[in-house]
Image (tube, rainbow, N blue to C red; front, side):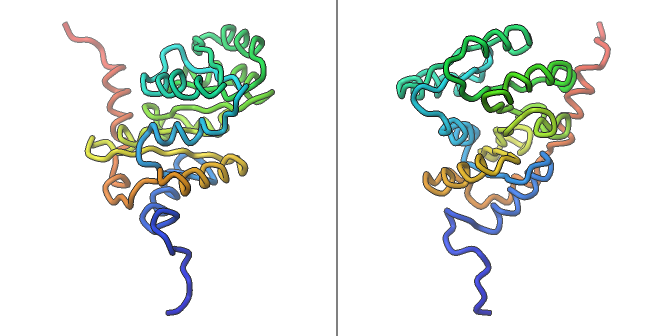
Length: 223
């Protein structure tokens, strides 16, 4: 009684959202986690690191909403970008060599095997002079934890596998970078982009759905 518990304004912090953020951050091996109102809100919060003159590398098969955000909004604010075939380490290295100045590297969701095979070369490009951001929506931390490899941050549309039931819209960003964590917290609070208190999302199926998807993909085809 009479002792402040750290919650005074729902947009800034609330117990349900903090519980959700702590849980998903732990799954990603992250020290900071931020829940947003949608996957695009989460991506936008990360992209707000960019300043006029920065250059962004995005997958050549990027999610349409991400491409629209970059090409129609950030590109109009002095940010340049290049779509890159991220399955090719040589193409990525060449794109980094052409960039001027360095910016943020975007990485598409991939299978664990694909990411593992190229992670060293991708990490060398990204960590040398920029940031590497991985969309882990469809792999989920059940299959891969990119923060333990080369990623500076991991982004999710939690509407999909983390939620698992198509009845919750949300986004998430996890990071171990203190500066990036401070930035994300500031954006979340300032723009009211944080997820409302959600009791459905923690119920999700982050383990069962990827597991079944992999089993189905590996099952022999019956003719």
